[in-house]
Image (cartoon, rainbow, N blue to C red; front, side):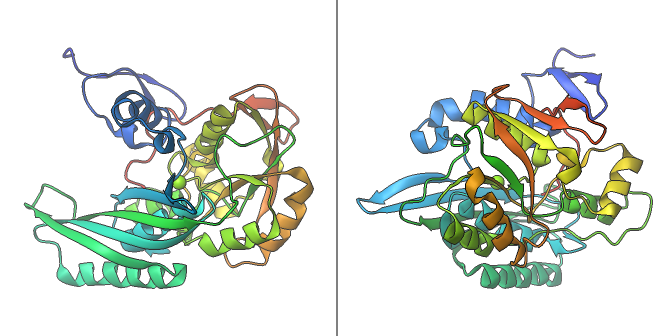
Length: 355
Ligand code: MG
């Protein structure tokens, strides 16, 4: 073994690197612990500022004395480019729209940067762009700037797309990962794990046929409905890479609170549950692209869930847990058989290039 080769220990979920400061490994893109460490150790110190340090889905800044902007950026490298329920173009628009919306901002404008591989069929690119157009129209955003680069055959994988987004903060809205309080409840907008399993199916990695569709969708209209219903939504975040488990761990740490989930209340499609059981995955760690988690004051929770269930992307919304004072920074799960287990952040990498 060479000096710089990572050393792995096998865990139930995935290989966990225990020593690798030398090179980027796939786990640095997982959205789990390694991604968080890379951000905290390498990116945050040189770029440090309050908006970045907040560690939320979008940076919120004062544009002038009366307007706040939420700004976010996201690169998309999903493989394959097309999968049941979506494609890289729809994902690129929805991913950034959702990150801006999670701050309680109204997404307005996107930019799109394309890295194209020599040899990509132009007809495929046209389909991807048409999909972006449709998703942007549904979200009510415009793509106002773009960039195209082409790299030699073999130096990329068809197309990668970066999108950045700008949204206007609704006046008086204060939402962030550090604002969860003991007594709040945790809401999920629908079934979890659909996107990750749909992409695995498209790769032929499931070993069986399913009709599971990705949930990729713009959530800004759902967010608007929620914000019109309650002034006590403290946190919103979309559980993409790393899944519900990693996202709730981030929030628990940011807010210094505990989160206790009720296993029986978490909505999971039967087909997704079956796929996870066969593959040895936990749906809590599977990526979602059209779901949000909200942490809401208990007194408003039922009204928020009710309004969510009336929207296109919130029909299966449910209360899945509560925020507690103890143990700070930890997520626990009350299981169906009455025991309690720790739900940790995703270690290593489970499904590379899922978004
Ligand atoms: Mg996000």
